Image 1: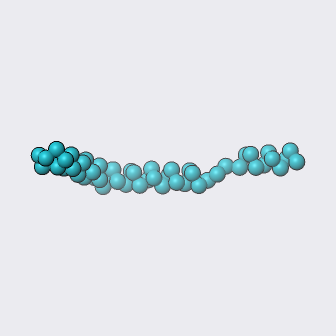
Image 2: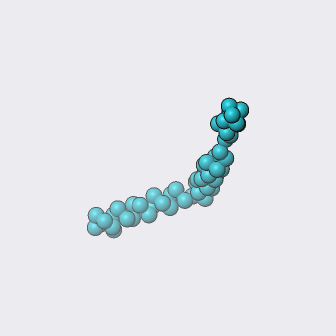
Length: 54
């Protein structure tokens, strides 16, 4: 019985690592394509619209 619990406790779940890797790759892709600048430009436009300037 002890041997069986040792096998299950050492098992590593792969799904969280795959998910994190996917989002890191997508983040790098977004940075490389210039999405950061576009998001910040849109944020400024929304803020200026809320204030009533833009």
